[in-house]
Amino acid sequence: MAKKPKVAFFDFASCEGDQLQIANLEERLLDILEHLDVVSFREVSSRRGEDYDIAFVEGSITRLQDEDRLRGIRAQAKILVALGACACIGGINCLKNFLAENVYREEVYGQYARWYGTYAARPLSAVVKVDAEIHGCPIDPNDFARQVKELLLGKAPSNPDYPVCVDCKKAGNICRYDLGRPCLGIITRAGCGAVCVTQGAHCWGCRGLSPHANLDAARLVMDRAGFGRKEAQNLLRFFLGHTAATL
Ligand code: SF4
Ligand code: SF4
Image 1: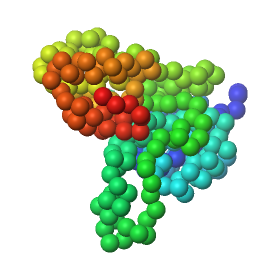
Image 2 (image 1 turned 60 degrees about the vertical axis):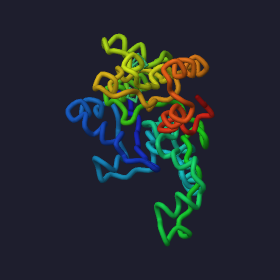
Image 3 (image 1 turned 180 degrees about the vertical axis):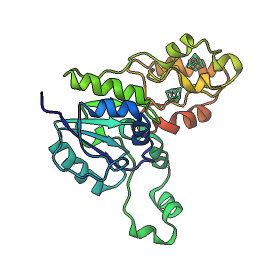
């Protein structure tokens, strides 16, 4: 029997919700674990191993000292997979990037602000090479299972290159713009089944910009629907603050 790849999970600034999604696979997780040797996964096991082939890394980089730790993980891992919006695109941690550093430091740490180092939040790819990305906030556990299968088969894990609107149409939703509401599904990478729209909300862009996102066309759609620049920017910054995109 072929040797199982050794796998470890790590987290930086995040809620650890993506690892929780994986733990929530329950019986299916046991099937996946038959093909992997998990040497470190703090949420489900006390085992701590430093020898691993695949690193799944959740969270964004928000401190200079995080960079050294992430480079160490990169040096050890043959394959590094970014797990979730914070790791893949910077995510909501990047909201602070639009404030002066002293403002967010004092907001979080109060009178102890000077004791804690922090800097503008960024995705893993701003510091090291990332081999695969599992998008979402949180990730879809089925997407995790699919990408692990692709990795085990020696394939490069893939993501859809079309926008959420395609998923949304398949789900039979009424477009939020037709209801007088804004939505970032027009520029966001698909793969979630447009779950937020289906549940009555709108898309916030948690899966990152679609590779062929047409921001000029998106701006026109928003203009026609009567949404101003500020409203569009606020929506875009919720998850996509690290991109240079403007609407
Ligand atoms: S509701 Fe959003 S995701 Fe759905 S079609 Fe409209 S813009 Fe696209
Ligand atoms: S609809 Fe948008 S915000 Fe919701 S899960 Fe999908 S990509 Fe993320």
